[in-house]
Image 1 (cartoon, one colour):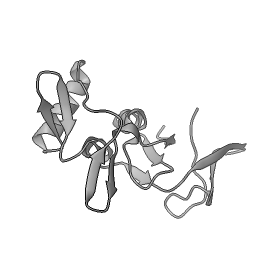
Image 2 (spheres, rainbow, N blue to C red):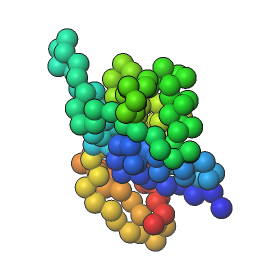
Image 3 (cartoon, rainbow, N blue to C red):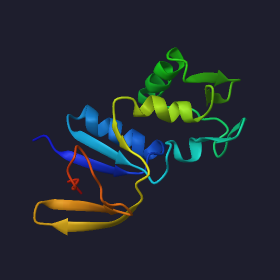
Image 4 (cartoon, rainbow, N blue to C red):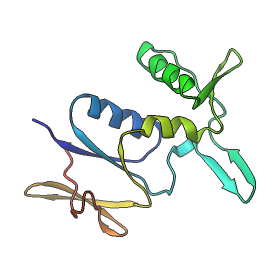
Length: 142
């Protein structure tokens, strides 16, 4: 049965989970309190200044993630960084943007509560209930 899942947080873990759920044939909506995505792998901007904070580089040790990273390198979203690992290009948020490609993303939505109802769970946000596809409810499976 095809189900709709919600992931709270568009950092690396949330994006990786969303990709696996989509690969298993389900629908996913990723919500994040920030305007951008990437969590600790975000690129910040202040006027003309652009800088990465958090992770300086990342590694790919397992075969499945190495394949994902190879695709990011091919797409110009990551590049080798010496013999230690990889960096996002032009900034670390490019890695998250590559992982988010094709996912349903909802930004500026801080999840403040989960409410269990007869049809499943509703994610409450500072803006009310999370809106997806014009509805006011996101069903999630736990």
